[in-house]
Length: 102
Image (cartoon, rainbow, N blue to C red; front, side, top):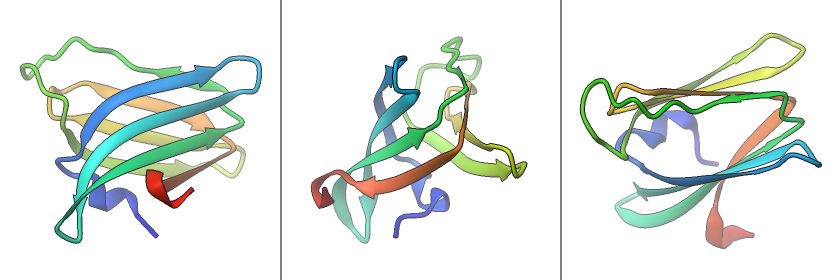
């Protein structure tokens, strides 16, 4: 199982949203256990997403840290980019998985 604390220095490639189904997918690249790995964060029951790209600390595609807060009604997933931008998503659930493990 890949946890959010393993995402430091991972590269945030892109995100996709399905408005109709309320799903989102974040695509990342990271080194896990010394190996280059493609990761996906799959969100279901998406109700909110903010993804600013102002880059107040300068350009970067790397993740500084990621964490979750669970209110009981929804999970807020927060990704702080090394650019200083904060990406936040609220969803019923999410998983972090190796893209090749599907």
